[in-house]
Length: 514
Image 1 (cartoon, rainbow, N blue to C red):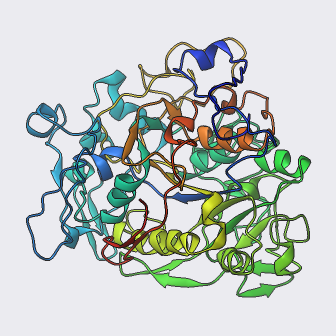
Image 2 (image 1 turned 180 degrees about the horizontal axis):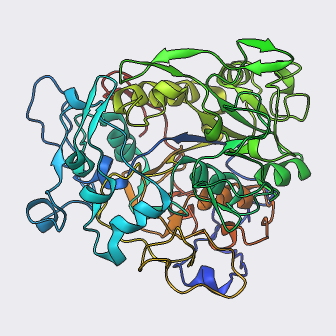
């Protein structure tokens, strides 16, 4: 199914599994006569550790109570979201009520976001154990950590750019992590719809019943800590979207800050570039467990070898589709932007609480999207802003149990349980997990639109699969169950122009979207 312009006299019927039907209606758009996709470039900006309520809980109403913060005023007709309203703000079932972080408090501590602890905080749907289960106390670098901070949220005076993208394009308020847990499961679900298939001995705290629930490092990466196959390093045997894209000769790549080696020692790459993080300490730019393709033999670039030339970026060569972020800019500026690009910021700009923050994240996201909008490729591009996990930040919505599990690490509906498992299903994949932000920025995105279609991280995988008719991965990948992102698009509307933002303030500086 290609993402194409609708024609009222033509209809395309697609077979849906029973599980997909249970997840709500699926929008299907017919093909043009040439059956080629309107979207020629998908760019996934994959950021870190934010729940939906943490960034959008009071959308579209910002406090606007300080001249030191960028003001935000919603456009007329802006829809509301399933956010923090009424009793949730004044009589919350948690130990404290949600409260607003000021822009000056953009730097916050990292919260507990372990697979089992997140389930405990959900408390069978009561959503009332966040402070005592996930909140962090103590100090972290220059930051003071209070467990009650887990209930904090930002509004349009801090996450101004994301609110402005939501105003001019489309966002979801019903999208979830595919499973519970930290960064690695989220990244794997994005590219494979799958956390199962670990082929090393069990890694304590990271793997349960053959499924990844923690943050083991990729053993196929020179820049992973430890090296030499020590505990905490794994590889996976499942197929991923790279396999499908290669089979169909579609160009693609994962681009990550700090991937380019700073040295080689004994033939092994060293990824030593750093920036000062929001906690005041040096932070490595490259974070191995944020790079999902490095877990798979068929897509890993163990020694971080660069592409053989700029013109080969996105094609199969010595880099094996794994690149430094600088290669993304080279490809974009030279007219070699791949059809599918996964873009990962250097650590200090990825939005992860503790070492990054919303303002550092905004610099990266806005600069990236501005550059895309200024490129000739923009008129056929869809940018998807998505997140790997919630960091444990409070969100009030209980996710549906799409993937039951019963392992020693599960606690959603009681000790050792996450619903009632299905016979033959992989375990250790309790999901859906916490609700996460998801925004589509594209000339074809619906304008000022909030989508309530049930989706998850693997819906992005499905979007790519459907756009280029790649088929499904199989092997219990969640792509077979994923809800569609198509309701966030309108291929009949006049394509939107550019909406350029200021990377520092998030304010609109140029709008020719009408």
